[in-house]
Image 1 (cartoon, rainbow, N blue to C red):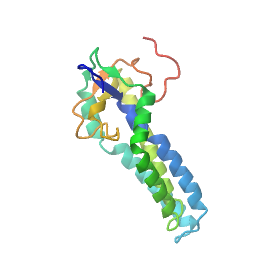
Image 2: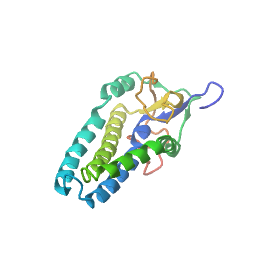
Image 3: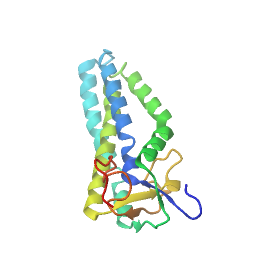
Image 4: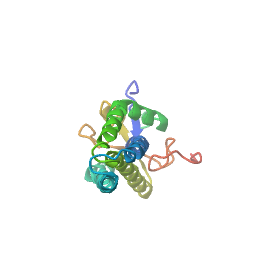
Length: 195
């Protein structure tokens, strides 16, 4: 958090996107290992169940709290000149540090579930990662159509630097499309933005 009346701001899309890659890759890895285990249901049923869970998890993650994101984006106030914009890598690092134990537990649970339903737990985890990526892409499309990037106060995020649309978040702030070091949607900028 910044000092002297300054407010630290993190990109909404970056916070959402930060969990996509770890969940996706841990899920794919767990599913790959899970396929090697015959399990109680057999591999075929496990993979089919996992595919269904992947689709459901992706859809749920994409749609959950969508109205809240829309409402916060619609009432976003312009960021002040004293607001401090957090770098993309700092936001991603903070999210991953804050969630490392949850990610480890989710991975171990996905591996353990393979003894009952092979690959299903891993595909569920991967579906959550895919859903976060799609949600950040949706936020990016909103940012591009509104020609403004969305930011959330760092001190309003949960202790583990998550929940950019949680109860503690009262409003978003917005900046021009060239602000910060992340493109709309939270990905790295491919070329430096013209300021």
